[in-house]
Image 1: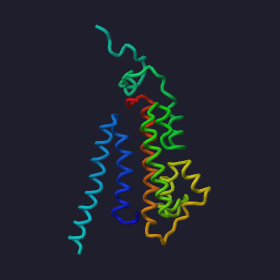
Image 2: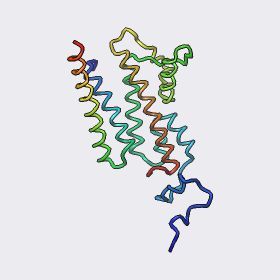
Image 3: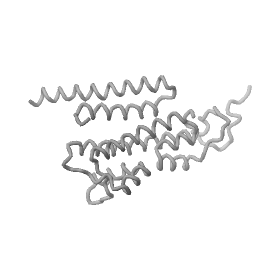
Image 4: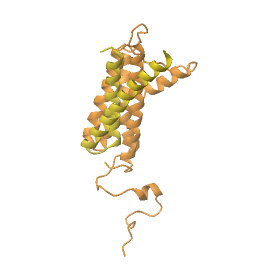
Amino acid sequence: MTTHLGVMILFAACVAGVFGALLREEPREELRLAARIFTGLVFGAYALGWVMYVAFR
Amino acid sequence: MADPNASVPIGKGAADRARAPESDRALPNAWLVVALAWIVPGAGHLMVGRMRKAVMFCAALMLMTSIGLAFGGRLFPFQMSEPLVFLAAVAQWALLVPRLVAEMAGWGQGRVVAITYEYGNTFLIVAGLLNLLVMFDAFDRARGRRRS
């Protein structure tokens, strides 16, 4: 897995998992927060990538 | 009317008074917990009785370190002449055993020509920084500042 997107997804999953476990106590809440962080990281980076592509091409 | 703070010894600080006596279980020494969390990721949480979190932290941080090394990331030395290299080394040393094992095994030389080199560095550095947060959390739990 050496594509930008693949590595980013892997990175986001690890970071989201750690922050979910750090910031919440119940397993269900941990999972929900981790999912939100993961989604934010991946889609945020994706959106930012498009913004930069459009702005600087 | 009963005093709600009657069980709190006189002379304790505000932070101590704010702690709720949720458990009768004696908490381990906070500095020992931090030291263990530094040595092995997740060990601090194991000490304060949070088995699931300990496994989660250990798995995630070990995975990140392994990915970083597999991607050709570099284990940075303490090099004062290069401030960013120095800071990267500080972050990486926040994971003691994985860092030592990788160094003794000869991994982490850094393949600069690899397309994943910078990704590898990012994984290694962020794994260390996340372990710093895990250490702080373990310290707070050992001090009774967080529900444990």
